[in-house]
Image 1 (cartoon, rainbow, N blue to C red):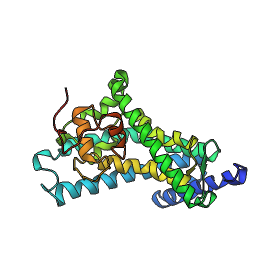
Image 2: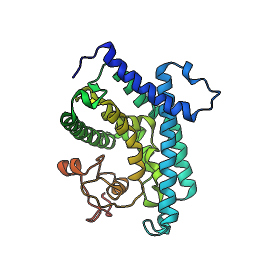
Image 3: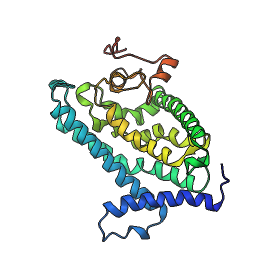
Image 4: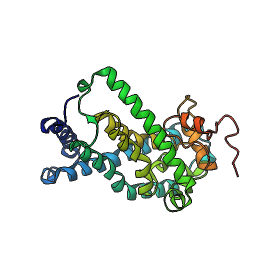
Length: 277
């Protein structure tokens, strides 16, 4: 892989500037002079607009599909959350969104300055190494997210002052796709931080890293819809609903492997509906 010289780092800046132009140039009114803003502020604004748009598009489309188009098919009528509950989840999420967007912004800043092991082009390492590095990245993220999430439960002050905000949604009829980001902002940042920290350890493709950060938002909507997708080994909503009702199982991120390895897995098709005391 090439050295981190000025020309090499400029490739990262060029890439983020391109993303800024796509989002800010197309979604902001022509009268808004965003190009005069400092580059990090442009990046934060792009992340905020893009993240908020992604949250609403995923949330509204998914809710419309499962609660109206597929009415009573996936979610029984008595388990559909009220409009008031979903509006409260949206309010909590929107209050946290500016803070959430600081994480990818800071990540991009560090990458642009050569502090991480990110590379801008797949061709810098070749496809075999790209696939290997991405696999290692995902495994380490899975491990770190598991333990971060678990410690947010096990360390009582962290649970009380951070994670409890998200766990007020502890019944099926209080969970919805809008609940995925309804957390204390520091809680959300801590659980997403492994995606950034791993870039200091593993060579990571820049665009893949940023896409996976935003995929977290989509995934958060998916795992809070209470629908058991039954796709092994995916940590789907069936598993995550158990997490919200027992507080002691299924801390994993995308897969069930870490819970299986560390003894905290509870299968929806087993005794998952039984609350642990």
